[in-house]
Length: 246
Figure (cartoon, rainbow, N blue to C red):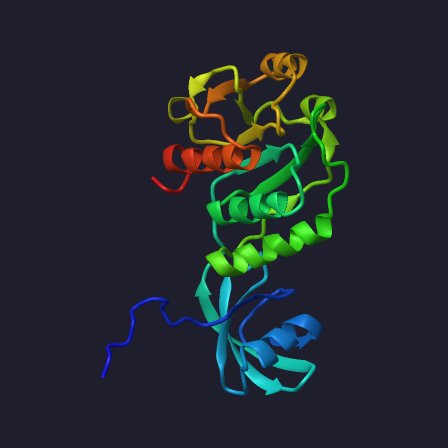
């Protein structure tokens, strides 16, 4: 008989639910979550899954009742405490639909705690569907094992962003015109990475960012990166140097 492949590993389904979660707490599911577990994953009474609510860690759950449009779960025990991830935020100029969804999803997988869309002079996207982005945040957290949900703020213009930000949080500005190499500039602590739109920041915008308190221009290498690639490259570099990849 052929050997059972080692990949992909067998694992329990993982689902975000509205909490708070605690041992023996019943969880009632309707709509899309119930449909997913009952009709897609085909879970039945006695089957188990992993649950998280974004605030109280990860819990083992068990299907108590399963119907076509409704499901009742029982919380069995905690499997992991709430994560205490690194304090990294990402401020980014929105890009086209599809690409911005991918950016949000991957930023969450990499461990970002907060997302801030920033509108610049060269930003070509004037509307963002934050509800869709929040759905991507939940899906990414379900897939990658996070117990916290990244927050996402309403879009703001660059000048308002610079005026309103907490200057105690270091601002790492991905500057196409040059800066300190990212791996050398990044340091542990509350951090904010700012990346620009397609076409980059205007000279006036770059000057304003450089003049902002506690801002550090950084370089992401010699190649020209797409906006979403630059954001994810910066996150990965920060995580490896100053975050929880060390």
